[in-house]
Image (cartoon, rainbow, N blue to C red):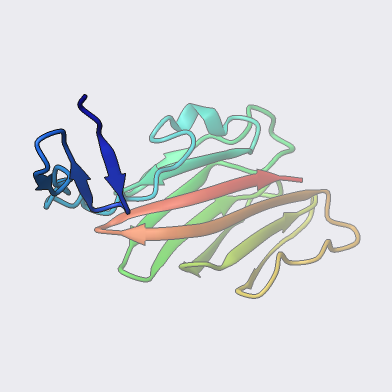
Amino acid sequence: MTTVVSVGCSTQVDGTGSASAPPAVSKSATSSAPTQPSAKDGTNYKACLGGDCEITVSKPVTITLSDSPIDAGPFTVQKITADSVEVSMALPAGPSLGATIKKGCTTAFYANNASGLAVTSCSREPDDIVGMYVKQIVTVKGITDGDAILNLKSE
């Protein structure tokens, strides 16, 4: 009669009375490189039509946010540095406002038919301003190797 008995978790005894260790489990010595964060819309800037998108930008670019002359836009990324993104936005009243947004911070561009204002905060989204009917929010979610991930939201 041959019996197999498991002793604890580390040894097996076969019918001959010999003990053997369980087969070794190999672990892969390779480790994968950390993945870079990615933007939901990638480099599809047309996804920003309407004012809402999450894009990756690596060089200066102008993005159309609306076809309407009473809305914000176009939005322009002028420069990307290791810790900030320089942007500007044309407003319905004609002026263009610029801002430098640090990684993790948010700028809200406000406008009405006579004026505009850009407000940046690194602690929370800027509040609404009475009398301004355009509010375009831009958040720099991250910057890695010259690629900036921007989240744009129209309110």
